[in-house]
Image (cartoon, rainbow, N blue to C red; front, side):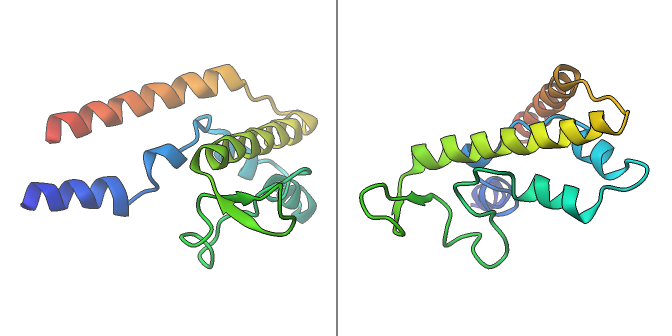
Length: 136
């Protein structure tokens, strides 16, 4: 019983479900936020609200109620639940944010290698999964 509760806590309550995770490049956010001079409010808005945003960003007010809902093409202004479409949209929007961050970093004269960041992320992810498997 305790192992189930511990597994449930670590898998579902302490972090987003696996289907909502996005492969975010390692060190990208840190490099962006540690730019000298710091990113401006306008640049931060470009990252948080990139052009063409379909789903508004999740926050503490809509984190659980809006998850999985996408705009309904048959009824403008309405939402419908579609998990697969939601995942596709979230991943596209995350990719837009990654591209905007890299564009801003490169415009400042700093350089970020996307392939290197994704490789570091995948290595870290594998280590975490191995640690979870060995624990359970």
